[in-house]
Image 1 (cartoon, rainbow, N blue to C red):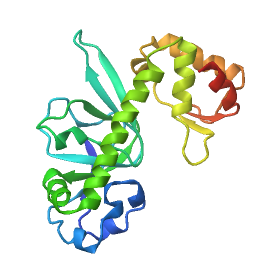
Image 2: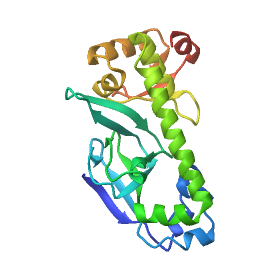
Image 3: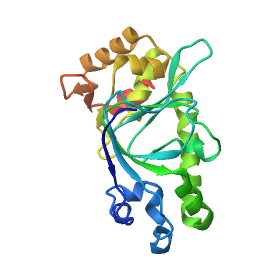
Image 4: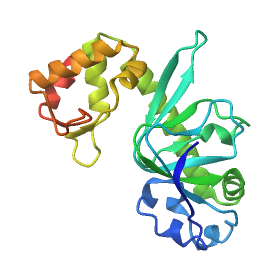
Length: 235
């Protein structure tokens, strides 16, 4: 774990109250009485692209709410291959399995530079036991995580290479405008889609040539989705 910045974000819960994405994360429905029960520090952390937040099998000490950037959850298969099981984006929670077990069941790696809030388990357990609002939000997050995992498996690991890449691009659209797509390294995409790196690169290049997507940066990570209906037809 190599954070580039570690500052205690704890200011008598004022930072949590004023969080810019509070409506998207766990503390959205807490009231003043709930905040008064929080005594352990909640850390504001930043990680560089490629840094590990926690490893598969690590003892679970807290959960992470993602404020900016993207995180990949990785598991090692029985034959030693790494498979990306899900991508997290702002508002998602990493390490939810810590609430029901003692270890993390995947490795969390920063796909981009990320900022997260690390919430100790004791805070979650205290609030979860006394605040129906947080308990409900936790259940909603857990249900959404299960749904997302099922959707990733159903949409991204079956079908032709063209269908898998098309589905992936559709899933990576920005919620803000539905037209901006943020991808990541082609080998990571291949690990998620169970495709060879060369196959992923070929399919992305084909979509650019056909003007379905338009690159917006030199690294080939950010695209403008020009014709989403053609991707939907392919998917």
